[in-house]
Length: 182
Image 1 (spheres, rainbow, N blue to C red):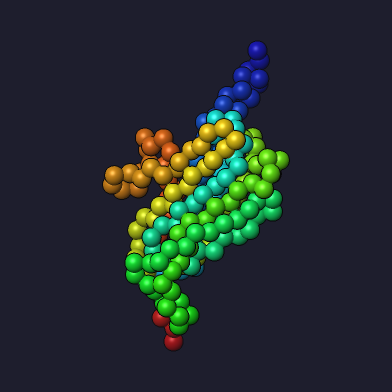
Image 2 (cartoon, rainbow, N blue to C red):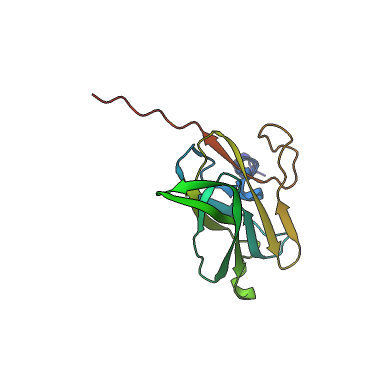
């Protein structure tokens, strides 16, 4: 083997070892956002369940995420589940006492399921709470064979190191102070 071929192999191996962990789990496109802001959650699904195609994705909306609205996905059936809120909130002058707590996308047919070898995104939007801190989206990924419950949350902090199926983390940052204008 020539030195040039050896260097090519080493470069390829380094590229794979530096590949982002995002493709190993379900992640958010934007993993941080300002408190109290509108937020578009783009959930990235990088693989199925042990080689099986993804046929359903169920997302538990975290407490404090207000007004969740999912984006329809061609070839997938969209359902939402609402519940009465323990603490109502006001939106556009209206008191909201019931809100979306769960969103589910289900492939309409077996042919519409997301193959393990492919990648896709599932989108929802809403408003973040006013307080900064971690927000965890728990996602149940159901496949043609098996499922993965991405719902593990660390006992403290936000490090998911050592968790086999971590929930999806959104870091809510303090809202930026308004600029002083003269």
